[in-house]
Length: 137
Image (cartoon, rainbow, N blue to C red; front, side):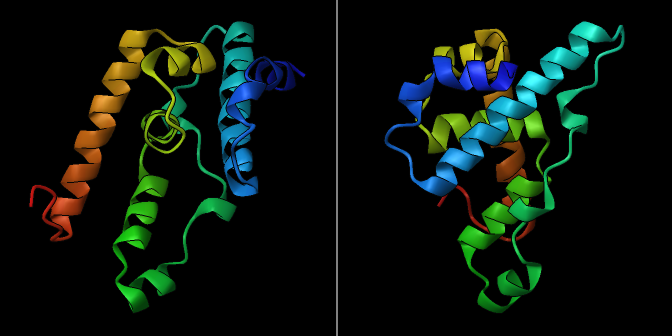
């Protein structure tokens, strides 16, 4: 119910989205709401990085191997990225949320959002470079 309330408070951010995007954004809100509830009830919080991504969102590795498509490679890397960084990158780059909107949506500080965004970009660039993708050219 807490996740539904959080989504309802931010319903204006869902209006322009397509079905798949609505689902993705709902998953992010729900995951962070569940983590918040868990952290309030337990003395030892679970790091967001330990929360695994659902299999339904993992791209097919065979398709990536056949096509060699950069988009598939990036999707695959994002599925391997720690959830905290992935969520911030998705909200900022895909959904266009500001730092403040992300902080409010996830219940963290703006500094935390900036750190996760910076680390996520660096992580993605390093992984792409390891696979021979020129990220600076």
